[in-house]
Length: 367
Image (cartoon, rainbow, N blue to C red):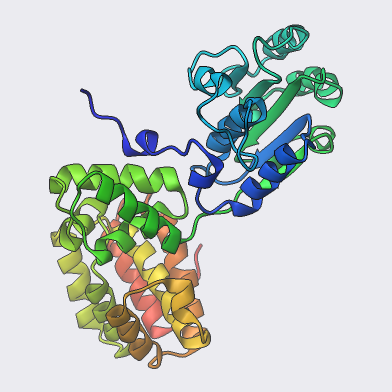
């Protein structure tokens, strides 16, 4: 049997399986239980946070013959039929490739037809912000007063591009980025089911690399598991991601604190010889500056950072050596350098200049 990507294999099929979006799933379950279902919903948020998955779960749940606490039972005739990708009662539309006015007119013509063997016909329009102005105008009337058996779910990562006339006709739900802690728990469950060996440090590195996106996290985990042949270690994880070992970044900041110009240049040389992406290294430096600032200024630092005890102790010790204003300056300098490094022809020279400028507190004006 061909390999199924982890993000597809472990896509949630019930509200209970969704992670990090309790404020949305609970509201939708309550609406279904109390028969207070709206006619148009807007799901907005970063990629990989569950917008399309929850839209599909919602579509099945509103049509379930015996919903359990507002969630599809998964056993009734409707649930089994709606599991099929080509069911005519759940219509998925990619607005990125179907964004013309004629595409929306086709929807408007078809909504008049009753659902077949179900209570509701659900239209899921993904990346809805890609619709043209004329397409939005065509959608407007149908969205405002659809037939009682039609529900629209609009999903977008760029809600600011939607006309106010569309926004005002939808019940809006804002999806949040998933915390590193929740992603770690989810990863551990997936790895256990897949019989993949791992350590806690690797989990946290992978979860952090996912940056709050469940799909991105599982995609990263998939590639790392393949590289490590289902025996994931910290060293191999860092190698695949191109990120820098925590100990090396801590050592680098010690050199900055000591104003050791030679030591900084030597470490940059070492990082380049190891084949690390210098733009990624700049991102690591910016992130480390932020982590030190959190350790220095927050009482509940590890609730924010979610580090191992040894690593937290290392960060807290180093944070005491720096002033808050310097850490803020490092965050600004290194985050700016990250984007510049992607396009410059002299990557190493720019990184060296950036690090020495930040270390010595110089004000280098750009032309």
